Each structure stands twice: as C-alpha cells, then as structure tokens.
Length: 225
Image (cartoon, rainbow, N blue to C red; front, side, top):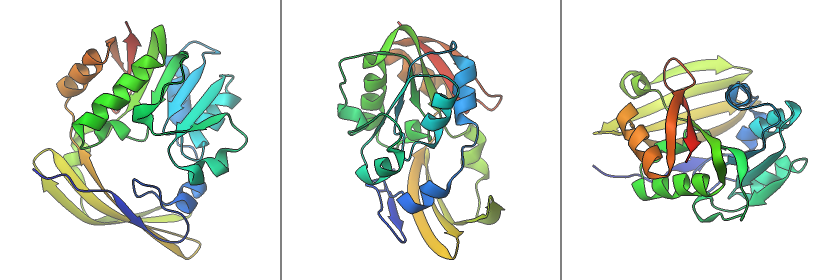
C-alpha cells in the first residue's frame, strides 16, 4: 500500500493539498451547514476545521451560530474576509478555548495519513467543550466501490472523473473541473474508513456516543467526554 500526495493544476493559487482556490470560490453550499445545524442546539458556537473560502461557515452564521473558521491556506481565507478566521494547519492548532461544536467536513477524515487523522481528531477534542459535539463528514463506503470515470454537470460546473486507481483501502482519483472556460484538475487519495474504523478513531480521541446523521453514514456526530 502506498500513499500518494495530493496535487492540483489550473489558474489561480493551489493549496498544499491540491485544491484550486478559484474553483472553490465558485462552489455553492450543498447542505453541510444544515446537517450541522440540525445536529446541535440552537445558537451553539461552531469551530470549523478546514473552512476554505467559508461557504459552510457563512451559512452557519446565518443560521444563528457564533463561528470561527480555521484553514492553512491564506489564499482560501482571503475569500472569507467577512468571517472570523485563523490561518493555521489543523494538526497544530491550539486556540486555548473550546466550542460547543467542532466541524470536520470536506471528507478530511479520509486522509490516507493515519498520523494526520489522529492529529486532526486530537485538535477537534482539544477545542470541543465537555459534552459538546464533533461533526464529521466522510466518504460513504460504497463510494470506494462504485467510483468510475464519468462526467456530470452541476451548477454550471462540469465534473469529469478522469482516472481511478485502487490500492487496498486507498482510492486515488483525478477529477477535472471546468467552469467559465477555466480548467482545473485535482488528484487526491482517500482512505476507506469502515464504521468500526471511524468509531475506534473517534473513541481514541476522547469522544463517545456516535450518532449517524445520514442514511449512508457519510455524516456522524460524537460527544466529547
């Protein structure tokens, strides 16, 4: 089993994990904030780890949550200037404060680096108040089995899965995006996490009482203990 680095190409800045900033600016919210909002009490404070351009964080603020976003890319955070943010890698973050909820979306939990996964979960626990919630988004298990080269268009953006490679629990894909005649590519590797894998990782980080928030188990909440 080998781990492959994430890479990206196209116009504008590319983040260390291969994401094209100009492409992410175009993406509309797709319900992440609503899933989080329904899983936590009204008015709960939320820390989003890996907030990018702030599309989820901004909607959470509109829903009445005090928010803070963290991202390692200053180029991403330029587009979240209307929000409270901190520029930092997730794994080394220590704000010396806690929140009612910590959000780890964008399938960051599926990193192929187990050390990074552990560090991100420890950061989440460090910033979650006792009895508070961590909300995680992951790739559904059947995504690893069914993803194949294909094309689709949504919200004026053309998505083409150009290549898929499987290596044990790892899946490496290259996706091409095109919008307004601008092309980008993103090659990334994701690691399959079974329900037991995720439950064990969450437990080891200091969380209990897992609650599945979606039928396909792509969203999960856990309570800080």
